[in-house]
Length: 101
Image (cartoon, rainbow, N blue to C red; front, side, top):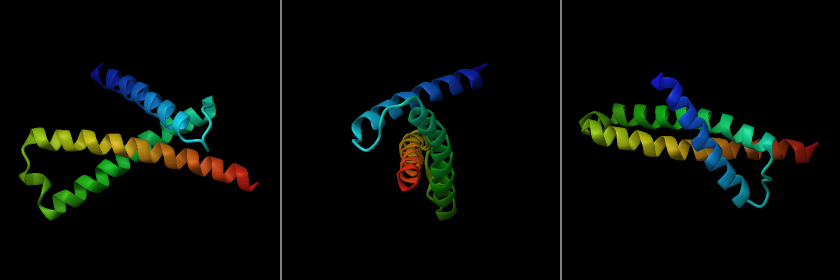
């Protein structure tokens, strides 16, 4: 049950971030399709950035020395930035593909 609640909270958070980013960037339009693509890209970017960064820090020996509280905070920050970057890149790629054809 907690996993479903976490998924719903993640979706709502990604939709909120997507609405803010899509409304802020002049080249992006706030449409349902762009918002859907932002949410998909946000989940992909969130998991990609967290995995790459934490594996790199673990190999360097930095991540294992941190207390568990700091590890969790780092994971939350990385997932936030990964979601924004991933969602923005996916919407940008869609807009770039549409304008070229």
